Image (cartoon, rainbow, N blue to C red; front, side, top):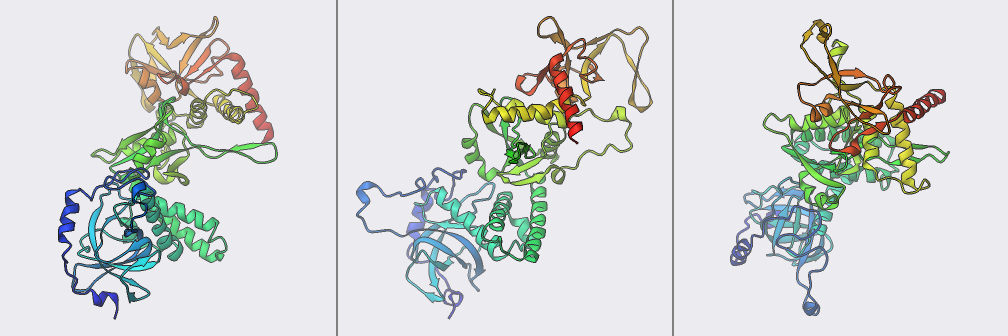
Length: 499
């Protein structure tokens, strides 16, 4: 006789008093982080006090759910998984979907245990099927974690990740129905992707090519679903750089082994709501912090935020929780299409320049020329210099009269009109012309009474120094002198020769 038939007529037992007692203790609410204490439990690791070491071992376990079936004619369900610890019938336990944005634990009672299709009175560190009383009304599925109240969040998180990996990555090779992908949270999707990357590079590296190709196609569908979840989310979090005032750019510098180095495409880091407290602790320092982006009633806030980071600041994509799960910019927000638009009406942006300016601005000044940081700085500076020679920048400009709008968006200045451009006291005896890479930065410092004039650094550097992007975040800008610009021109010329 199967376990579903044995417990077809499940009923409440004499432990209702215990259930009521635990309800009074607010057993069902979680701390939001990955590490630290669960509100109703102790910290990760042992919760046994020194004076209790010789006491009998109490039932304690954690289990990630791998499968769920309803028990016919009851509100009960049968859940399967691999328990870590010891479980017995009539235990009152918690159940939580760790990856949910607003996760909250619920309580349920174990009314039966089956191991190898046999009913047992207890089970320890093994594969089991548990009957949960009146749990059909709860959102319990693959990845849900069942646990006793002494378990800390590290153990619960590990069980959550393990269940997603065993069920979706190892056993099903990412075979997900449309309904399953819709039900998965953004955190679930990111974890499945991360686990699949590890599996493909390690345990599954010997899979047949046909299997690997099918796995890749399924992963593409999962990533597409993630993109939709990000754009439609109520809010997302990201790592913000306090020095530049922008989203922090994450990039790695790799030694090719032949004396040359390459940089991985710089990405911003998006943090899902479910993991926000952990990352707030991780990046809560004098340089970085976790910031929130809310989508707003029109559901455009997140898309606009991403577009600004991709097509103004030069980020190449967005990583979700970890760098291994990075989505290319164009998959999240399409690049602006300016076909058929007059050149004068196309917004001025310089993402290829801003990218390197921000990466440099994030760094501390190198202490020694032999340090890795000095090498990285030189690499970033070289890329920035080459882009600076090509960039068309905006000079804040004021005039004493009106300007007539003509066809194509161009403005015709009146005869004898006096113009004034924004300058600042430069280094030495030279003045510096103020220039901006885009209108957003210009408008952060200058009001609507200022227009803009497009110019290159090369066209001014003979007479003036150039202050590019001077804002209240000095690290995000760069001051260009004549000798600096000459070195940038040389680097750009060398790059053309190398090509």
